[in-house]
Image 1: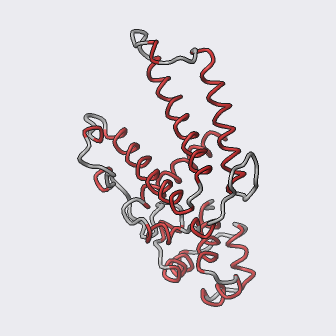
Image 2: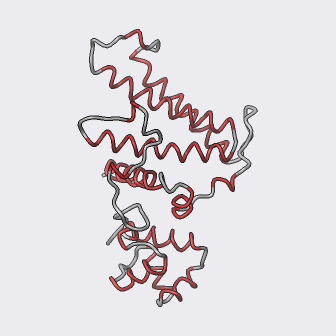
Image 3: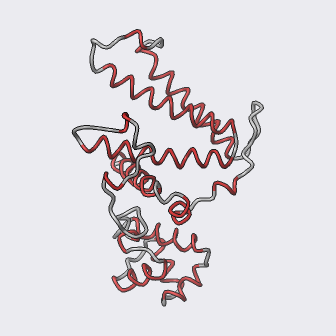
Length: 232
């Protein structure tokens, strides 16, 4: 049984803003059967899959979780836009993998920081920025340590301490960001007010960020596949 179909089927119905009863009527099945499909209790046939794809205006590949794009298209490195294609640092030679991953991350960050700008909360922006910078810092130190000839004076925090210190700082930033997003008031941080600006669906992301949405959706899919594989 496809594990993604029940989740995506439910997501599309809620995204459309209709009840399970109404969706069942439109799709020509009983509410009980649709409930079983959405819970993953029963597996649907090809005819129902196609009917759902037509009703929700998505591809069968999207419904089955085979593609993060609603139209089912696959993405190549050349199709991913560059935020600043004229920058020298945006040019990679050799393996295609670093280029692809770099584009996925950079384009996804464009969406993230645009959303932060819309919600206009300085504390939330600072906490998320700190978390991301610490993550890059940690990975850069790992790459730096690969060559013992590299300049050690580049860093002031000792090698034996930076991982734990950075991890602690990232957890604090993540906790603060979560509290701010939840509307909690603490340490003079202003709670998040413009929550409506952060309303997101796959459709709204595609419409609001036509150049970058595919990158974010692919990043989400890749990340969750990694999480699932690590749990096995």
